[in-house]
Length: 54
Image 1 (tube, rainbow, N blue to C red):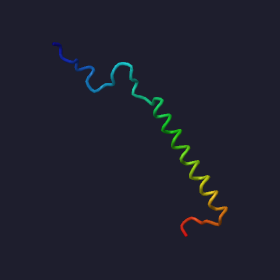
Image 2: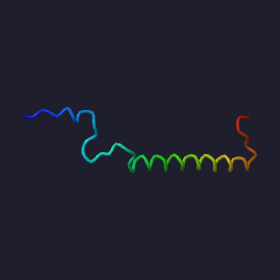
Image 3: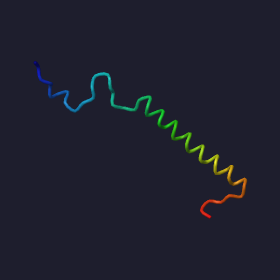
Image 4: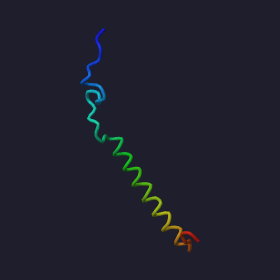
């Protein structure tokens, strides 16, 4: 049985670049959607004379 090489220790496996992938992109898309949703909710609530913090 062979032992693992010390060169590959601590590095990403073959085929993994370690950079952003499609899932990181989807996280940014979902974060943007949440921000826009909150902004539109505040605009809608202001039409009913709702104020922040009071």
